[in-house]
Image (cartoon, rainbow, N blue to C red; front, side):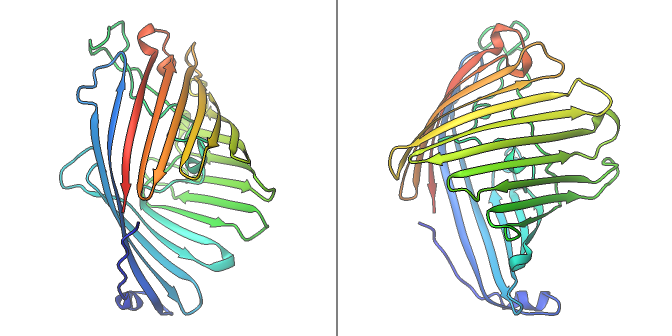
Length: 334
């Protein structure tokens, strides 16, 4: 159950130009959890972990009906456990009614593409995202060999200080999202991304997205993805296909596919199965991953677990780069 503390945001009115803000409030929410994970062919040491975060959110409504909201997240694990660097996700959002929503993400925001890079149904986690890398180079279990480069879905280009726009009012059931970062010293062209999703048919969602990372030469990547999900009764099923094209080269011309199915046993319990495959432009083998997962929620407590198997991690042909393992998380929201 969220603990909400409301305070007046009269100071916010003085910082806005040409209009005022009223009916302001601030909310404080948070979560904490304990995790246990293990997998073969790697030395994990203590498999227990802990995570925690607190989010401060402020909002207000202007005289013209627009809304302004800010969000700041404190997370001690935000930057690899770096002591004293605790600020994580932060954003400013302006809601303009039927004209849509503009969001400026200082950190931690999703681009239009990265928000949908893998949206397959799952009870807990993507198939490629649960396990860490394994050993390669012929090293046996626990020998500390070179880690294989695990890659997941074909992702979008999400950066610091990113501007995004969303509108779900243009056509009934249609959502349009775009994100933008201007060019700079390393990004010679602007980073642009857009996504559309249609859910005007009951239970059905169809989506498409494109992304351009704005880099020069062979570092320039253009990505696109398409997906479909359908919910009927207690089941939700989905399929997704993505591709990545490298300018002037083919080593990063990759393809990604995924599917998933979940079954909601009751209001609290969900089970799921999802799998994915990534075909690398410069590797002989495809990385394959499967995930059997379960999630149970009661009140503010969620217990989730996943059994995962990954083969040819990073496109490797070595036996040491076939691995399996599990993850269990107990989280508390407040």
